[in-house]
Image (tube, rainbow, N blue to C red; front, side, top):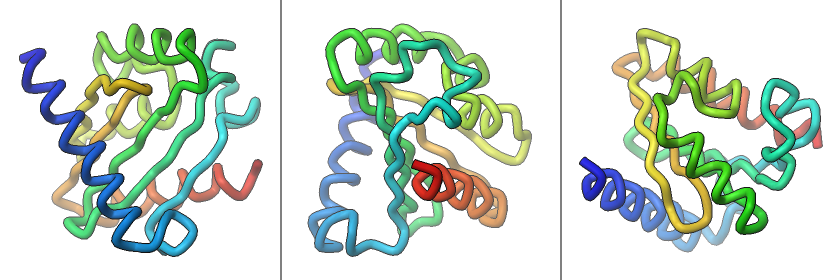
Length: 141
C-alpha cells in the first residue's frame, strides 16, 4: 500500500508539473489557483501550517489535485506526519471538509516537498465548489 501511495504521489506531481508547463505556467491556466497558508486559511490548523503553501489544480478529467507544500524541512515533516492518518483528520480544514463529504473520494500521498490530495466525485459540481473555495484562498492573501 505504501508503494502505491508513493507511486500515486509521483504520478500526481508529474501531472502538476506537466499541466503547468503545457499551460504556460500557473499564471496562464484558468484552472489553477495557488494560495499561501494565511492565518485566516489555517486558523483550525496548528502553527506548523504557517510554513506551508497550497496549490490547487483542476485536471481535465474534472478531478482536483491539492498540493500542500512545506516551505522548509520541518513543515514537510509535519505534513507527512499528518498524512499518515485519514484525510478527515488531516491538518487542513478544507481537506477535512472534502473528506467528510460522502459525495467525494479523497486520497492522500506524501511527496518529497509535502502532501498531494486527490479529490474525485461522480458529481463534478461538488468538485467545482471546492475548486472555488481554494481559489478564494488565493484572493484573501
